[in-house]
Amino acid sequence: MAPIPTTMSGVLIEKNGGPEVLQWRTDLPVPKLQDGEILIRNEFVGVNYIDTYFRTGLYKAALPLVLGREGAGTVVASASDDFKVGDRVAYIGERAYAELTSLAADKAAAIPAGITTETAAASMLQGLTALTFVREAAGIKRGDEDKGPGSGPWVLVHAAAGGTGGLLVQLLTVLGAKVIGTAGGPDKCETAAKNGAQFVIDSRNEDVVARVAEITSGKGVDVIFDGVGKATIDSDFDMIARKGTLVIFGNASGSPPPIELARLSAKNIKLMRPVLLSYLATKEERQEYTKELFELILGGKVDIKVHDVYPLKEIARAHSDLEGRKTTGKVFLRV
Image 1 (spheres, rainbow, N blue to C red):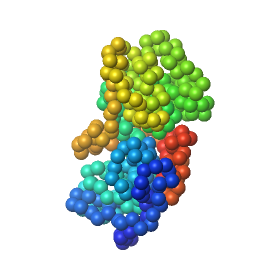
Image 2 (cartoon, helix red, strand yellow):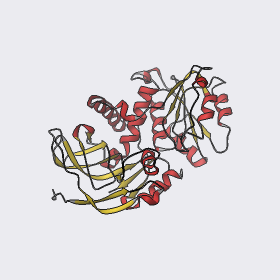
Image 3 (cartoon, rainbow, N blue to C red):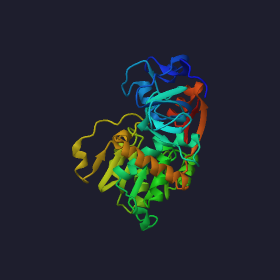
Image 4 (spheres, rainbow, N blue to C red):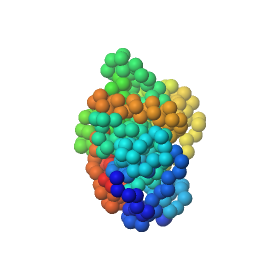
């Protein structure tokens, strides 16, 4: 193993703004290990909408800041008994847009044989988001799939061709839900159908509310997963069924306006704004859900679809493509 340098390359922001504020640097300090931590040489790093929220200032953080919330690579130093130098690991953490990232060992997961480092990096944040939201927010439990295909609730997934949306569709379909996916344009609609959506609505060219009513015979959907936000929130209230669950988890089109609680009353709607890390607050939860995700991947039940792999230096282009809705599947970086 090569000696650990004192400086490294990575991407830094010193002010909030558009993709132009992302600075490629070669003089960033290498993190110093604390007790219980590991140092990972990143091979691949995921790009997620949450990174753009911190970049623009929608989510607040102290500056300067190295962005990035997930990655995978090899342990090059360890101050923990959980991992040794040379182990392959994937993680959800912070400061991932860099050659080297340190984090508490109990927040990393060993990558099992049969899963590439690339696939592990692409699956962590979006895969665990989709899995925990299906289990915890939608309430679809282990064993529900044994009731047979299409035996579960009606579920609408917005942006069903995207990274998280596509994984939600795959998981929901495997677990027996009746899935309606929305996507913008014929190509993305085709991707949503390949992800497993039994019904696909072109949100650019069709009346989504009318089509949902037609598909569900006027009942509406039991669960809506909305990572789009401002552009879709009003129609969600029209499409949700009585006693339905509306799960808002993203702001791809902008942050939704405040919601009057009285809007929930007519149908007794359950409204949620979950975040992944609150479902992975303990070591046991992280291990349980990561194990289940890797088992689903190894079993061929979940396919991690990759849009493109960008060099870390081209992070601005990756952010622009993601925000411009030009991507289908996972966007990530080669370090």
